[in-house]
Length: 213
Ligand code: DLZ
Image 1 (cartoon, rainbow, N blue to C red):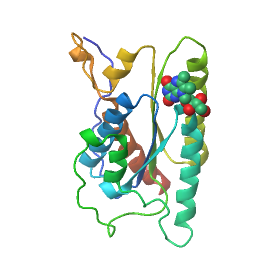
Image 2: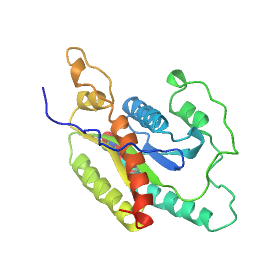
Image 3: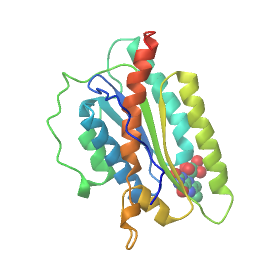
């Protein structure tokens, strides 16, 4: 029994007009993959269209802040230039197949006509840090969390902190929704929370930008 966790708010959010970026690390892919999948499925349930979710992968969590920063800047440049979409080369289905072909759904119909271009409405940085025997973990956790906060504040684009900072493999698996024998009730895919947070923050940021409170 725990009192921890996110309550659903009273408002629901329509993600159908949003363009969202996911940047995920490739360290600890066994947990990254379900986290990315959980995030995507949740956003789709809120109306975000598959073709408006751009996914990029980077080597480790350390690389997340810089990559998010540069990709946000690139999307903002797109908005003010030719309208050519520099980030549409890999549809979601193809990107998911690079995560893991075995567990992905078949590509759905991919229409370029509905695809949004221009600035991202929210960015979700996904990584999993698992403590080893040195101080490496502490340095990366601190730098990545500070870095991602800075990216959001500097860019004015909501950045969702999808980085697990775990002391053990078991903690990471449980937080990716992968049940451990005898601890099934502990498993919860945090990607669901990140997907919901991204849609909520993106909708609220758009609303606040128009002066509507
Ligand atoms: C080097 C390293 C280690 C030991 N552990 C992790 C980890 O648990 N999770 C993660 O996302 N990345 C790890 N990395 C890689 C660093 O984040 C980074 O990619 C390298 O130090 C190169 O900059």
